[in-house]
Length: 173
Image (cartoon, rainbow, N blue to C red; front, side, top):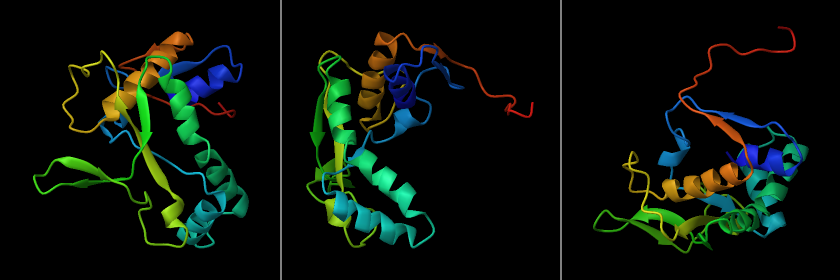
């Protein structure tokens, strides 16, 4: 959905989402709804270069990090459509009761140089939205998907559900 929104905003007139599931979101809707980002470009660059250990070109890593510096602001822009509240939080973890809590710590998965520069953000409130009736998940992925869905609809992106891929066509076909 995010790619479809971005393409439409970039001027692509015909954008379509094909989803094999009966509803928008696929497996993404089951996620924690977390968007990793940060503002410390150099720190994130150190982290991803360490993480990739020379297997990924600097050009690719730099493009990824550049995008990560913008992701939280982009999420806030998308939230404006329905009044959702996006917050930079930390990293998820279970409380003693087993309930999901957010710690104000790095979002880095591995203890590598620069990891402290990564942050997690998520939608913490969405007024008037009580969740999707088919979604039975304790995580806030449904909030993110509702923001994406409203943006897709506002832009007139065509969505087709229960549409699994049967064949991949290439230029050679």
